[in-house]
Length: 144
Image (cartoon, rainbow, N blue to C red):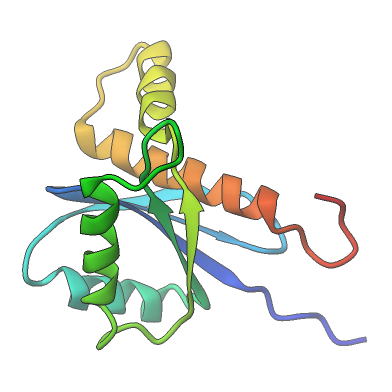
């Protein structure tokens, strides 16, 4: 019996200055922070390298909206950022609501009682985005 090759997911929490990055596969389905990138003109090539090096098969991008679910200026900024990646992306892109993930990440890091950076918040927020995506998209044969 042949084992299925797992899908490898990379999640992004795109901010104005930084991008939190997390990864998971669809077998273990456990998301973990990978890194935080400082946004620059090199960001697209850095993401392409990570996608290649980590064997990523799909990208999950946090979609910011207001608490009513309506688009904001940040929604448009993230959509424009992702559209600008079209030359380097070799994998499909999925959107995932990112409501309150940064607040949840900051609260968790605060509760740990250890020093943390804004980059730590961004990477953990990307982890929550990916966990939400995996929960909302169960493997075949699983219930949502």
